Image 1 (cartoon, helix red, strand yellow):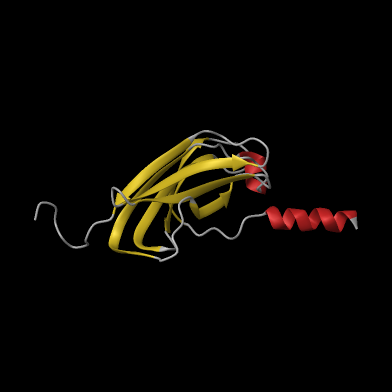
Image 2 (image 1 turned 90 degrees about the vertical axis):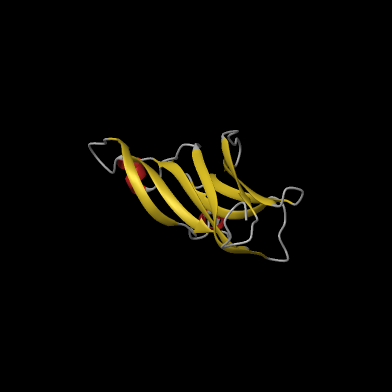
Length: 156
């Protein structure tokens, strides 16, 4: 009974399948056993804003623990979101809504991206940060996408 309860909690805390597609990676440290430490670059589309793609770079821990999927990745990340087509906003956008989440450790740490709509400046603001069940990290990165007509050049 106790084992079943622990397994249920573990399954509930695991994140859903990643929404991002890996664009590329670079090695940052050689590991004799297991994969090298890396920086990976991923792309994902905002699920509620058509015409916006975000690019996220973050560390991926290698070595034996990284190869087994039990290592904890670092909290640092960088994000750049861009308009890639006509922007169409869903009617139910909420400030601070999560648009991307991926685990950064076996159970308790996640990297996530949330969106804010800056109506005064007609822009979308995306924030990436890492959190942990007990103690999160203040490290973060932010990017903004001005909502502009698609297919027109500036100054016309």
